[in-house]
Amino acid sequence: MFYGVKSISLCGMPHSIKFVKQIVVRAMKPQSVVCQHKNRILYKEGLELSSCNKENFYTEKFLRSDKIILSMRVYNEKLYVHHYSTPHTLSMYDMNGRLINTWAHNDTNGAMTAYGCKMSFLGDQIATANISRCCITLYKLNGEVIRNVPCYIITKKSRITLCHGNDDSVIIADDKRSKVSKLNLRTEKIEWESSEVDKPRCVSRYREDLVLVANSKSVSALDLQTGNFTVYFQMSSLYSYLEVHVFY
Image (cartoon, rainbow, N blue to C red; front, side):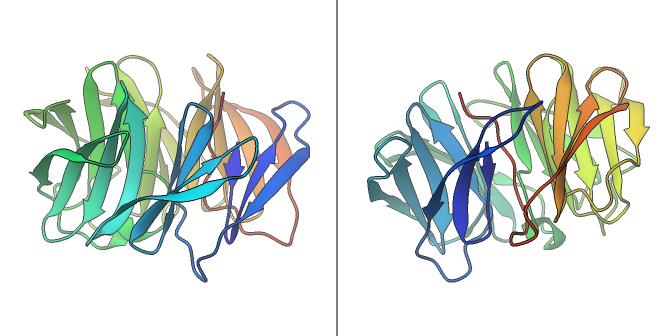
């Protein structure tokens, strides 16, 4: 699992979270953008992506971007990156940092630059938040638009993060509304909504039955099917928890 402001902290998993180790990053103000590829962690420092080995902490530069990186995920040995520009773009790289493809994501909203991930994978589809259009845009892996899924809880002032839920749903956290919601992409309906976590900054699936939700002070677990509160973890007051991931 990852938490961070100026460091990467690896912790044990629920229901007994405990600190394992910490990796200090060089950037003065690193953004909370991180993902895993096998035994290494990719994370953002300014306009650069760095790679850190989880075992020996060996760190090296991975690639440099000329745009702000909002989100990144590895899927099928490809790195997908969501860039902030006008409009936003999505790019696909191989795992050596070479650009394969890039396409426009028709969103121009700047509120998305705050906190956690805005992109997730559901099988061979990419689900990406689109604040300007108040929807979730679904893409094929080659960038072809499948459809836009309207979502009434997304507004032009939303600051949301998301992760995959079931095969046909995503979990959306909105720190402006202090809500976590499960959106069914097939029916376009909200299956549940939770107010258990104040100003949620990120969400991540854990196991088959839980969603981890982090705000600036804690990590909570919600039931994936119902949204019911399951367990709460008060974390160190020394850190602000901007993003949480499950690493295997």
